[in-house]
Length: 134
Image 1 (cartoon, helix red, strand yellow):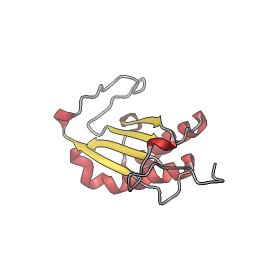
Image 2 (tube, rainbow, N blue to C red):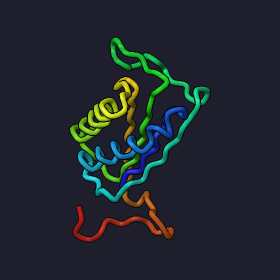
Image 3 (spheres, helix red, strand yellow):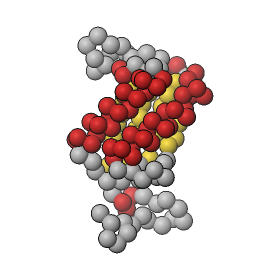
């Protein structure tokens, strides 16, 4: 049940949104065991003045972030281990680079975890894990 906010440059939003959405969902299905239909994404295009991002901080020894910087903030309902997170991070960076030509230095991912009772999907009802589900 992840929910992802994707901050992206406004000048790229129309051209990139569909591909980013598909790549993200594929990564979540493959590495976080998310059902294919469990897709909740919010794209937040922002202009240059709304994006204050260090071009070099932890970007890699010889890399700089560009105006194509993407931020994925994923809120997920159950914890994942370090291996799953690393695989998700790599999948996103590699596929975005191969598909859209986005530098891997321009891909930042933040993952936060919550408990099932922190979610309400509709009708004001708290989400409950079905009996027998892990």
